Length: 291
Image (tube, rainbow, N blue to C red; front, side):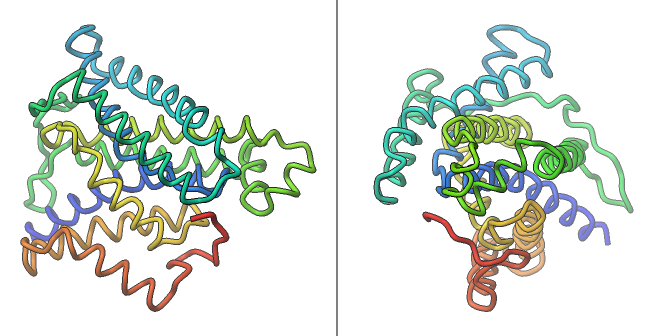
């Protein structure tokens, strides 16, 4: 029982991080119809900015986290302005290459700025643990789960209770009709890229205290977040979150009870099975998208 509880909580925590990144995918996809493949490197950049703010600027830890989120929101807007807006009407292949190019630029900037040596970001709870049914659970994992729950609730309210959310949903339903109704598509695009950038930074500062911070920190979460978006269906917040949690749990429970050598493969096996049986995702409907 202790082992199951430990693996379960770790899986939920990992899935929560994937969910935060996947929500960034969802936001941009709904507003623009494209996938931003720079999300993973934004996760990494957010962690490094938090480290810089906490060590070099000597800000309180929560202040450093806030700086990282604000900075990455600005970086998200810059990506929209320079990597997406000039080519929004071009071929999808051009857009994909552009976002991948933005990812490579971000990674190069990180290497030039901070080097390639692994570093660490302190967590607000340090290495404290709590005992649950005999299992020792790091408090950082519980913090990740709690922050993600608040984030998901806030985004649900944003989508369903605000003018911004109604406009994003209108864009996702029919972009041309939304433009004819006077929705400022360019502004909505910038706002969603900025919000997705902030979510990437949040994922970065949540996951960084649990592992060494390197230039590859965000690559794995990005892949799993993309898989979660496909698994849950790109159409809803609930679907994306369910997909992310399923991937986190399959990875941890499969690695713990089957074979740890294939822990990174199990989520993609699940994704392929879902695609074969239900192409629109577990909770999704058929999605019309540019990618």
